[in-house]
Length: 283
Image (cartoon, rainbow, N blue to C red; front, side, top):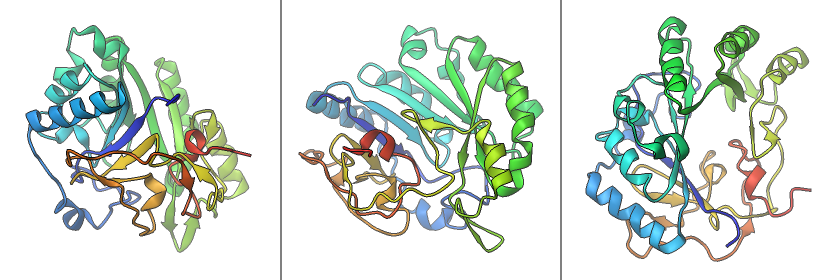
């Protein structure tokens, strides 16, 4: 395969924040029943098997909040021997083992996306943490959600992080607020504000107007997959965000493999912008 295989992994559905815009808002207890904590040795064996099968892959690790997962720092330092890793974290957990590591692989094979949630994290606490990570030579960018009540503060935070030499970007909100569906309901003024810092995946900006992807040939499940906390593997985020359940297998299964070929997208939209690097023909 020409493209490096990648996985997005919801490490566990557990978080110490309760953001109203989260995919799992109001469902943490329900979804948390599917959390699995098999231990460090089991996890290392799983990803060594994937390495033996596909070579070096890239893991995008999120949650919930991954930094509160047991032995998280140890796992990251071990897995970097086989795969490159990026994590999405609110910086509230203990990341000291990674941040203070003298290992060169942390600087060359690891990236951190720090999600700033102003309702749960004070900027005067969050910014010094992000600066320390940056000063230690690690790759870090700050992520912020264009949730309607937060949009007006985008210029302020963009300037603040820019002044501290930290990349700042925003993603679009997919959900309902005050009876309106987003991103469909963004006003032109809101789109203009979002546009000054809108993030992207593989050179394609996050959507302020939903893109229809259904029926288009896609590499989801072939060169990329989404992993749930219990090991269940889906082709992508779009394959489950409105209840469509397409299951490839389970990462803990010793016979697990990705699909051999691309398939047509079954979802109307691609809220996580995975289409940007998975769609066979983006025209």
